[in-house]
Length: 112
Image (cartoon, helix red, strand yellow):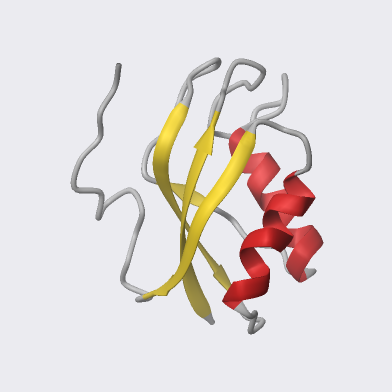
């Protein structure tokens, strides 16, 4: 199993926040659905932090694990294609150590 680290940005006005909620669409759901549509593998994405409803993010780091091998050059455009016209974009993807954890390895968080 490989661990991937991605950097994302989103305009959160229309979302219920980072984490899955019954009352609306979350960033976590958007990413997990897009990864599944691209890879055909279910995964859980873990963010460096959770944002509230309506909050935007610049350069937020997220990690997830996949069993399937993927070509990184295809992954970035593939995930963004499956995100569609929602105001979320994956900026960067890299394989990373299985020890890496987006939340616990975060060096800095800035809120405005």
